[in-house]
Amino acid sequence: MNLNLQHKNALVCGSTQGIGKATAQQLAALGANVTLTARNEEKLKNVLSELDTSKGQTHGYIVADFQDPDGLRKKIVAFIAEHHTFHILINNTGGPAGGPVFNAKLDEFERAFTQHLKCNHVLVQSVVAGMKDAGYGRIINVISTSVKQPLDGLGVSNTIRGAVANWSKTLSNELGQFGITVNNVLPGATATERLTEIIKNKAAKTGKTEDEVSTAMKNAVPAKRFAKPQEIANAIAFLASEAASYINGINVPVDGGRTKSL
Image (cartoon, rainbow, N blue to C red; front, side, top):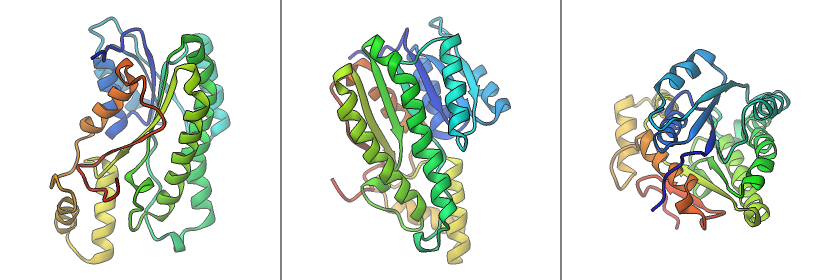
């Protein structure tokens, strides 16, 4: 099985922590040249210093705000003009705040739509020309199992994640002829800062302890534990490889079996 990513250039969003960071590390370990993207330059530098360079990889970063699609586009286009195109794009952004969908304010939907769908679209439009020229493209969107089974208390996230999944499927149909695949990875409960925040919010609303909330969430998973970020990154890395060349337009839950639907 060919999982070698040497001479491949990868752009990894939200790569200073959690799943994004683990993905950047895994792609670098497989030989890719990785460009990190996030808002915090100090954190970007820290992750950059940890990436594998044993195969001659060269890595970099772009400081960008995913509430500013136009600014993001300018930065990506400028980077490509000065450095290189990308063969792999990992769309990954932190989820919206929790809460019932009925109580959500309109600007919450607007912010989430900008951050997740509009910025994903800007990035795809910026990198696809290079992928077409190379005859190789992997666009992987890190979304949520909520696109198969909406999650209680995450109303805005459920809504926007579903939109991204349908955008992605449509895109896969349009780009497949160029050797470009578009797939979604759907993490279940994963040991990240985002999960810690969700547990704290649930505990505050229910009057239960954080340990009680955490235990209940684990018990809802057949594996009886949370995922490690590296386990999500492994699925992403496979989809980014040559070995996954005929996998296109699918949602891949990586959730320990929690999702009830097929």
